[in-house]
Length: 429
Ligand code: PMP
Image (cartoon, rainbow, N blue to C red; front, side, top):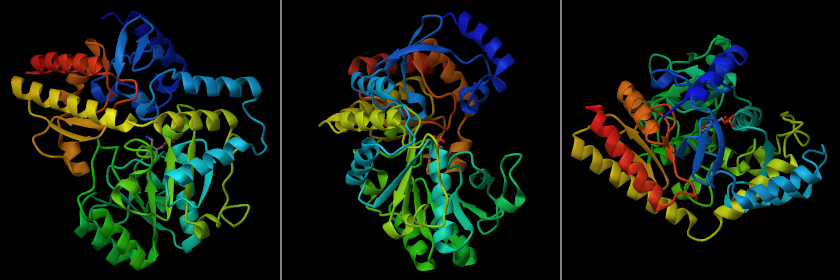
């Protein structure tokens, strides 16, 4: 496969854009380096690079592209916005319609507010929780990503009940010490942290089904325990459903799990591929937000007609009967194909899958927390990623990410992907 043009563009990109990319995860640093493939156009489950190579895509732009590329229903909505005005700086009916659609799908949302990114949505939920409780500390789980604002770029301290330290240059120590990071799926360590800091904790920030060290489900009872302890100590629960909202069913992960958080942050899928974020939750908590309350949050582009119309169109596609069942069926087919190929070639892997999302780890154990994901073989994954790319299958260039199916993947694509996996495994040994 020839990547001459991609390589040429990357040389230019490195000259003009810091690191050659507009988000660090797009570089191939985590898979052994090299010029990232530069995409030119997409349709359905496929995209084509600037050299004309076609790929079956499972990156889905890190989650949002659940209806594939160039979906006609979404294209029509975006065209309408382009022709009638993409931004007015006034309220529109679209915002109201879309907010109601989200509320109808996710019962814990009494009130909603739109933002431009998942980062903004999560950042605001943290501010709102602090404003509502009058407390400052937050607890989050190791390996979960919540965006790039200061409070969540914090690494775990040396034990469960120690305060965090900055995980990025530029994050003040004073900010990091307001954050406690504990391992996911570990009741005991969560309890230790709550015993020590519980009365000072404004909120527990939770990816209810983890997407950021691969797809990792909570162990039975774990999140119920977290929610119950939060309530007991007067801390709020925030579900970061930026990946999970509308990924596994028409609604949020909280409904699959039978949980009702105080606040929920969303993004990705709900924008139909355009920039978006949203947060919402219990009425009395949301009423802390300006102009009703003292917690400030705003946005020139927030709730813009293009993102609203694209989001509405995306949810209309996802609401069609059978959509999620088909992603689940194809996901199972893919998982089985991967496991069979691994067995055939004697490659040690472990797969976590929920419906149309899965993660393949090069490890011999079931991954239930970040440490286990971290211990999976990254060098092997890097080689696997490049072998798959050479066969026309695009994955996320990181061992921690998920493969996402879309409504546009067909059985033939899965069969072609399994053949690529079979080839890649044959070369790995
Ligand atoms: N929360 C989660 C769970 C995410 O996965 C991400 C993005 N990967 C974010 C928040 C941040 O969203 P955005 O990139 O839109 O700012």
